[in-house]
Length: 250
Image (cartoon, rainbow, N blue to C red):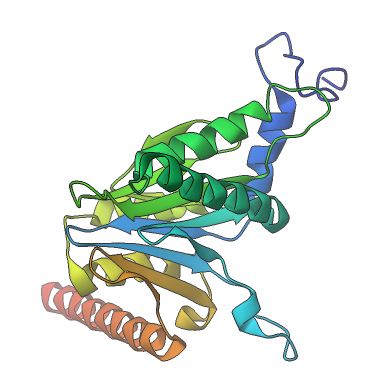
């Protein structure tokens, strides 16, 4: 194997590009990120590490705007993300200048995925070590969209998805609990999904909500704490009801 993982452009005999697989491993070690698409709202929720006391927490953002109607969250190497985000923002503006229309979510997703793929097929470079969740509203039809891209350059559309650390557990939770929701229920589902793997509840979660009318809005810590407390109370009530049923049956 050692001979095949040194160059990005060399396939191993069993068809693997090891550098791309190592990049996927970097994503799996990154902070968890969740995206949930509702009927009138799209939510991104990201696990955040506790910041040192002297650091300004506002300077460490995991969810960013690409355009007024498109936002992105990512898992993996943050420095790589910064480069990709800047390239995507420039493309959004360039498209608007050329076509005189805002970009569609699919267009910018295809652009980001194309850029990631390009870095798996050129000598002297390495793949981007990050996976992205891209959300937005179509500027023409107003329909909400959620896409995911990964280091290999593949992209796909989702109703709800997760990437990063423990993403399989979160995805399983979403598969069991996802249903078409709107407004606050969508926000609640995204936070509930992330709380499955994040310790200390709402304190270590960053949440942004996008609506067609108001664009992207980052939730304040107090709002996240209130929703997290509500979720914990619902869990406790469900647990108590289950115990009560068991006792009655016994």
